[in-house]
Amino acid sequence: MRLLLNRWFSSAGAKPVWLVLSMLPALWLTWAAFQDLLGANPAEALVRATGDWTLRALCLVLAVTPVRTVSGVVALARMRRMAGLFVYFYASLHLLSYAWFDMGFEANDIAKDIAKRPFILVGFTAFVLLSALAGTSFDRAIKAMGGKWWRRLHRGVYLIAGLALLHFFWMRAGKNNFAEVAVYAVLLGGLLGWRVLRTWRSR
Image (cartoon, rainbow, N blue to C red; front, side, top):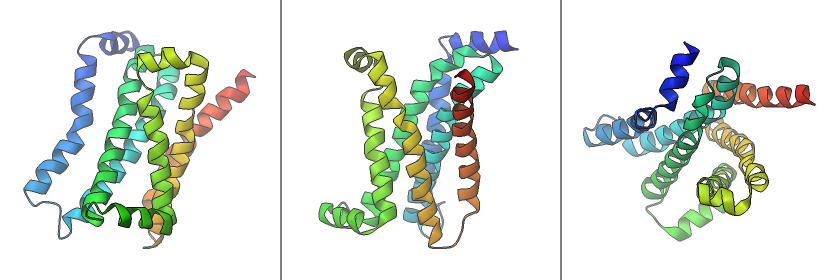
């Protein structure tokens, strides 16, 4: 089984399949919006759904290394860069939905809202940091920065995960609804905890 999975993830068809699967949520949301299937408040549904898929994609990209290490499917590492770019893709859709549907693309109002509401500020900070990772995810950037500094920069994904979770927590705090927050906290805590334990053991 391990050999078959390694062969498949090493094949030319693996990335196109991963691409299509990663695009499915965005395609479904687009179709649902045009078919009026997003409920009484479609704008709010889009903002929340794109935020949820950003967190799910973030959990997925952080799960690549533990799953690869534990399972021995080393070729899974080929999917990590694409998975990271889809975190940025859904985060961009989330920001776009907020700027469009909530703020009407009014730059001054957006700036005031970011400064006024802590959970918006935290989310925007996470997006800025994520932009730095997405902008340096290509081979030329790795060569220009050097592997050591590139790896240090991309460890910022752990900070981004914490900020994203805090953003989600504060958003749900207004309605005193923490069930989903707890699920993501356990997932992200486990994925980050695995890395801490692995580093401690290696030393």
